[in-house]
Image (cartoon, rainbow, N blue to C red; front, side, top):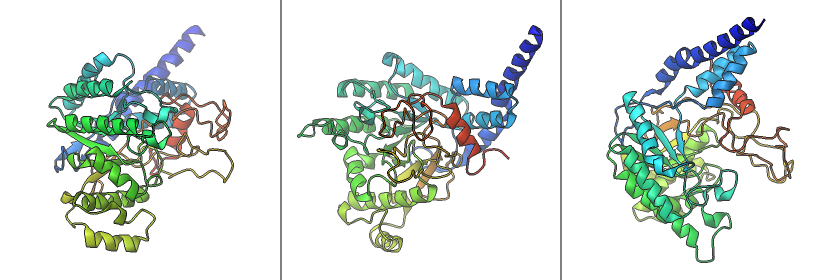
Length: 401
């Protein structure tokens, strides 16, 4: 009996390892071999980087194999071997960030792949909510960015700079004083990061523009301009959120057009918003924006969990629905690629690591359970097996044949 149990466990581990190392590597590699933009605007073919999987995902795969749930195991394996971002959040020994980043970009270069680095260490991040943390002050943050830049060096990297940094300023969450001291500091921090990272020869930087159901075009564009978007490749949308592809593509087009108009001396208040009639908005774009997409800021989108679009809880069901926080019954979205078919849309990326929790998600209640799920969700960034299975099973398009 003892030998038989050992044999089953060993077989499960071997099966899981096979799924991770062999069964779906080819599929993931095929997905990330896409044509599109390199560096700032190039057209060379780009293969996106797949970082090592969360160790708890491997544990889940092994448990599913042991239970005979091979299709679910295969789905999780396929998910974690799909190209996705590496999040650098300043936790642990910040003195080693240079070595950590250097190791990532070196590994990606060896695999001839472009790594997506999500830098997430700005002071006061997430309005001190579920993903609270970050550097203690501006000086600490700028020193951290300098070390990240030294780690990247001359190698290639696509940087998603500080999710929520511009869409969720200190002034938006009641953390600032009457003089806007912390908000001014936020722009100083992002400005330093932009200046430092865009000076690197192989690094592309995109700035935070929230998503299509958050700020209006007229609201987010001045923030992007103040943060120095003209020195970057553009902006990113939907990081860790669930908005649909069509909605994001339209919003991105409007933001891009309004940015070009504003950077050319126009007034962002005159731009159409995402809620403007589309025919009227197209007419404005035709009249005020160059038809050459190379003259406009570009954007990338996060499609890691938007396959079924956003979650709409029943009205007044929860004091604070938190529709962005581990919503139930969502699915993986379209595979990462730089071949989007839209000259303004540089890439679809998996910025948020699918399967990792958004936080406790109390939805305005005292908790500790998430009332939409009836369970206590893991802390932000930890593996959430139940949600991981949902994302795989509800993927649009399907993850598995």
